[in-house]
Image (cartoon, rainbow, N blue to C red):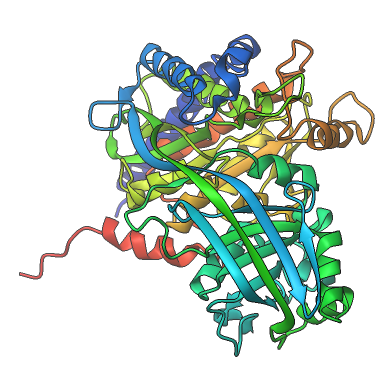
Length: 562
């Protein structure tokens, strides 16, 4: 190659680089202009509307549901989103509503015994779609943390047949107590620490009943949250088998009452807990029997997920998903003066967030390469049911879903220098987030309460189990222009006094400046992923990585062997 050819080639390379750089700069400017559509005024209007008393706490199947759905659908239409559920925004989710009454639970040994008071001492329910559920003389077995994980060499059910028996289970993981990183993830909760897993595993083991011992620190919430969450109607997916594979009864008891049960067995509660964190723990039959039951009022219902899509211009068959749950706890059937669980933070903020972000995408011309799906799911408060149904019946292929960005409970704390990443270190979506956060002069911080397992407590988890990389952030607590600790104090006040309580209401006094920054940040992350051809991945060693690697094979072009 002569000098002229070399010079010409270099000129072409330089021109291509400049063109690429120009395109990147143009994209940056386009996204910045679009992000300006996310304003505090727009966001406030949505939150105030969704958290109004007229929506009656947005319980699935209620009049409040109807008003909520109509509001979100109207907004989807005005934003120009296309229906994603076969010509409709609504993906109907078959639910069964079970309202338990007459709950009774007692424990006996020999001539001694004790009965527990519903609400004060225990909560009890059944997922089985049948008029009544009961156990009688069921042997109680202390099964530690109720974990069966042979891949880690851990089995709390080793050597025992649980059929007909009642499992007494500790909440969280063994590592929460010891801080030992070799025990699952140390103080950071894994899915094995979640109460949902413990009930599922007890069912797989054939137990007749599963009872979790409530302790505030490892559960990450006080007894009132358990009592409020389990009072009134409970929703489950309406499966063809009527949930026949689940335990007859499942519930919680207070720590104080659990200690008395263990004392009745002639055992020491603290000694059993200490044994349960050691490898090689084996279940301990207590010599105590449990008797209990309840009656079920059953109603079959349907409650919708709402899905609207903004089609991509280059690769419309690939997707980025923004999601939030629209439901909350409805109306308390008690006699309290304020009976409405408005759910302003949890999760009117999330639905308002995806609507505000959709507005930004509408203004981002010429649009993203990938399609963007906006998904408002039902029945999160009943155990992530709407997202579970979606993951089992996806409206767009999960293997072609590049990422899911979940918005759940954005606290109005004010502008922060940090962004809290729930499940920190999970996927390389965090690289995109960190780069975008730098433009706001912010940095990423890990979960402030990793032991609470928040990554497993919101709707993105059902996508993650299917392999889709998920991003879930919380408002930062290192607040600008406010004293050290002010953000944490505000958040702790909310968790103690308003979370899952009637006091979770919208206020004009909210400082949403930080929330607007959070939403603009999430818009930027999603817009970058939606404008690229690469596929985000889970970090090496992440529990969801194998599922993504398996689904990725279906994206590979078919080989022509001829």
